[in-house]
Image (cartoon, rainbow, N blue to C red; front, side, top):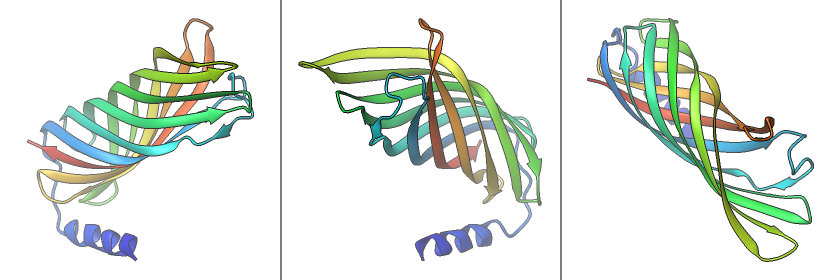
Length: 190
């Protein structure tokens, strides 16, 4: 019921025509993230408890309706995986730089695609036949996504977006997996 009320409210707020304003963008978002490990990882058939809440903040520049550039910070939450013998848990965050290309559907709604890069950092704790050890891993990888944007006013919009953030081990040149993030972002254009 809450989802229906939220959807009707967004439609009502976005009912009158407004064009996207060019300029500096600021945004805050929240959502749900999930770590999706590749089969070739050290935890191929792991039991996972890896969904968690995510938060993000962005600053960028909107160049009209069709193009924007963003610098973002993403708190991807905590994860835990286990293969029966070893468990690994940790906290992940990321800084991204991406371009968004939009296509208007109506005067107030548009769809968009995103492509860019993100630098991720994972603080891990693991147990492997002994005491818990702490470690850190990081890397720079590709990110991409898509979403829908609804304008509330000339200066404010709500975005529903889904992003995929790749994770790979640069030393071993191997894919670790993806962080899949679904989020809602409040975007302000100044």
